Length: 382
Image (cartoon, rainbow, N blue to C red; front, side):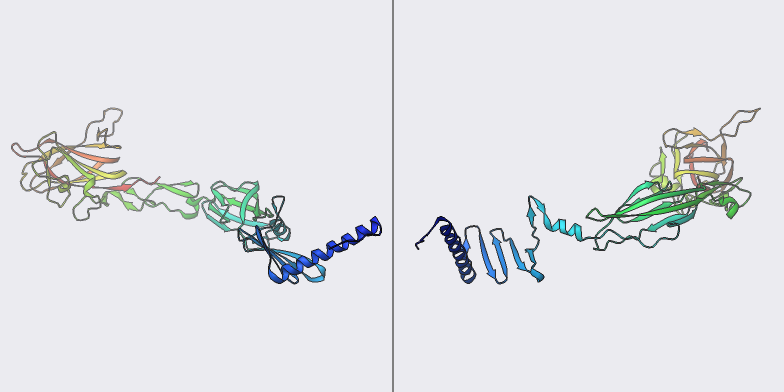
């Protein structure tokens, strides 16, 4: 194709016109036959242009209303400008901050007595339906009450005190937009001893943070001193077996005699001599009030026994009388009659222990120390 110019200006004008005509011809050619070039494909579907790349990516340039043009990437695609995702920027611009529910005239408010369980679900909502994150930006929650940042739940036990707390909680979405709400908590000291008068049988009540404790006297025990401890078995006896076999042990047993045979109403345990012993593990420290011991038919003679006790199962002490100004503590000796007679011994003072050990002091000549036992008492309530 030749180009004739009358002047330099007219030559430039004709060159520009020829370039425009050539570009139009190329676009028409592409639109009619789908041109594929190295690295991608361009398609023209009037009024849209679609550009595809080797990585299965694509973007559509489309005509909108009122002369506008829109960009639409493929599924999961982005529109990057100098490494910045324009679509994410647009999403941020179009998103709305979280919205809290309508508070009362003084803000979100809660009033709790000491020891009450607090369980408040925060009611902020994200207009786009996204997950919110909750944080405390001012103030503090009452001691014992915490905020779960992802679940949006305030939970815990209200402190037993007269106090007023103000805390600001922020709800934030994935676009870092947020909304704040003020929460007010009032806690009240509650004397549960005066409110409930729970302690029975002369027990003294101590008010504590969120609960109370009964200090029991005499043979009474339990949460409210409602139990008669010297009539409450720990379950060593064979009829109940609350104490498992694994918590009974013995030293120097006679022949095939087992420690678990030493339960009241059971077969009976026998030792070899005065170095033998039968031991009961109560599982945890407890208050022992009473001991039952029973001989067996093959042991016809009266025997004398001592009790030892331990907190850890390693270091044992003799159970002794309570010393006074005029006397010293001496080991308590239990007398067990032979021939299946039950010895019922109410201990002079309550024994606080986990391990109880029965040791023979004397028994019939030519016989063995044999016994069946049970223990009575109550749990310790702190």
